[in-house]
Length: 280
Length: 339
Image (cartoon, rainbow over all chains, first blue to last red; front, side):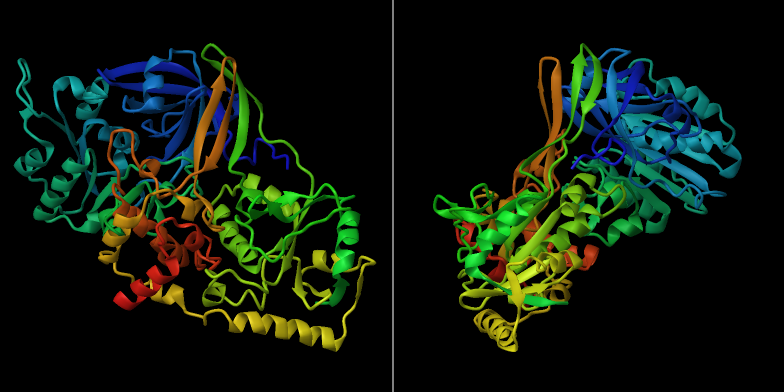
């Protein structure tokens, strides 16, 4: 039963790590470029999709595509050191070969978001999947109304993508609200948890889409507070994390009820999640 | 389609003829159990049909471990060297109706979304299936409760029914029609047809009556207190899922030594804690309570919702194998009564 590389869905495309950015003490962002030049040109994806990344000799793990498809020629993924593959990735150098199976999963329905205000609420590494949509919207700035970004982390050193904060906050009609858990010398922005900061800022739900991602405890209180502010379940979008292996709906571990996060997600509205059993 | 008969004494000669063109796999005694093996010696053919095989067909299409591709490593540089190897066509003889019916389910899973699982479908395409009607079901069998495939088999090419010193052989596909074109098959009489029908009805009468589990599964209670009790009993050994012909979950792992490595997949089970455990420690199914529910709900609720097919064929293997006597048939009946 010989299968060619093109129809064996578990064979990754080879890519070279072109650039590694140290984001925090335990998080790095990797920029990868496909070895196959034709693929480098033709490869495209949607904001919110994910990939399976191979570290040869160690294994494969699931990461969101944190780059935006509006910026061609490379893809990026941000990795927090938590397990075997993520630890191995912390140790590789620029120039290393990795394997990529992408793009996988669904994406944010950005066409439905057109003409609306967007409210991004991110915590820690949860900013990574939202960054794809955020930069996509900023690259198509005229399509969207006001963009507010609330981004928090434990400390200022735990905020990722700091090198883009200027681009984000200087984009027209765009505001970046940063917060950290505890006071620090020299920190002039907000201090406090993300859900509490959200209540201080009191964004209007009118014609607004809220997109949130972060640790489960943050999401729980962000959702409560968004509802209190008048956001409906249809106005709230998130992207879920689940243990995945195949990424293509076959290996059976990322189900929530009869839905598979890898093919029916990872992006869900709160209205969609309300119809699923509470097992995520 | 056409039906013929073949004398039991001619089975060996027929299979030997087939073996020129393909691998022939059949259930044979393997220690205390019966298992599908490649037949090498047709002279001393000892096919074990009365005993249900300890495992179904899962390993024939998704081996317990299967290499996905291989690679070469030089420092941090990698090069793919090969993916999967070619294999001969094969014929599997003595397949139970339940095990064949399970393929309808695993076909649906492997075609779940693009890309389809090409490794699985390459093996499916290269395999001819010759089924045999059960005449001596195991104590745990309840296939008739799930579907009517014992009387009306699906997903196989040829169906044999024991009618004394010969088998009544019904071709179900063009492949099956070609098979009964072999010289060992003779025309069937009306009496042969009636004998086959009464043999089938005799075994069906001894098995449970049909239940519309897919419909009843819609109303299962997520918080049914029974799962707390099941969780207390369950040892999380996974035997139920490893012997299940519809269970298909797998893990993907690495095997690397020095400059060579391979990616492989191996059977995995939702009954293991680490199945859904994430790197940072969160687990959406943290206890046996959630995991025993997952097995039953996946088969009787989620699968009908997703594929329109029950994820159980009533083969009873999980019931026979469970070391603490968890019986999925009774569990489902209880869930249906509790709703």
